[in-house]
Image (cartoon, rainbow, N blue to C red):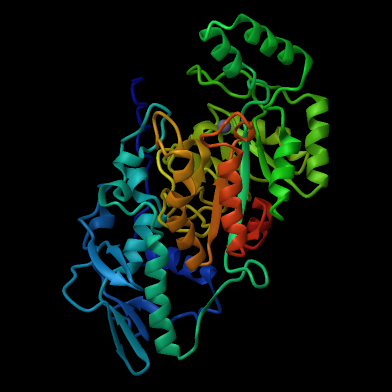
Length: 457
Ligand SMILES: [Zn+2]
């Protein structure tokens, strides 16, 4: 096993006060539901109609990554972990015009949504990523549960009681209970011939090997398939977002980048796909997630074509540097934040959100559309090893949580996994997931369409 990367030194941070946490969490609560009245929710002692009992003691004044173990409560028929909850009292106390919440759902929502654990933890994997194994989601087994949405549901119940008015989730499209964001990281366009050629060689079948070579030289590669991918997505009434890698040289650590170059011919093909309503975005290469100048150089390449979003290749994300790099690059969206090792919710939230800036004690300006499902995660020697028929059943409870809370189901299927030769996590499994999403009435949106629904602060 290659050695894990070292985390960079902890940058200086701003104090995280009660007010800081309240402002950050209530801004997202107000983005999740339409028409939340202001000046309604505060910590106990503030004489507001909805109060939250403070429960984090001095946790946010120190640098420890992990809080005390959560207390598990039942909410809407689901066992939910509540951090910063002594568990001594009923969760909600309702009196006329007032609601008291006995668990510190503001601190708990802040802890998960801000990514506190990965900012303050030094644990990194060989790609410099915060490992799923080091997360509270893994430790307490709730990666497939959007726990912050449950905390918001408690707040919503309290607000509805105090005001007598129902709160409704912000709609994505008329009649659509939730949204879906379908994307493809374009790492490879030329390697589809290699596996069958190698297999023929290993099996001692020189004729078959020669046939593969001949096909390679005379026909388009099975992975050179962007138009076919777009057609596959369009079959479900959706449009694809392609994250395109502008760098073909490997990273300094030897990790491969694109196996193709952005030739005029490829630019033309991407332009044609964009004209059909598909989206092109940046797949920033190895070495950009911790270096603003390198990230910005790649961003400039695609800015002229009016691409806006980004996802880092290999889901590279250094929690202490990457958010500031994206913030510095300006208003946009990113869709990197998922665990490579497991599907689910890295920030325990199934809506897009503005990541927290620990150095300045406020939200960053860029929108994060979290990544919930990556094809590679589902079937890979280092990750999960689900059988082809196990994939949709494994994902369904998690996708149903997104539907329950009106969130965005974000699915990454690499173009190379539309190769019909892939029967493990290939086109069939993609179509099964798409069929489920369509059957449940998801509004299929591109990243830019999702981003456009979020006003800047
Ligand atoms: Zn990639």
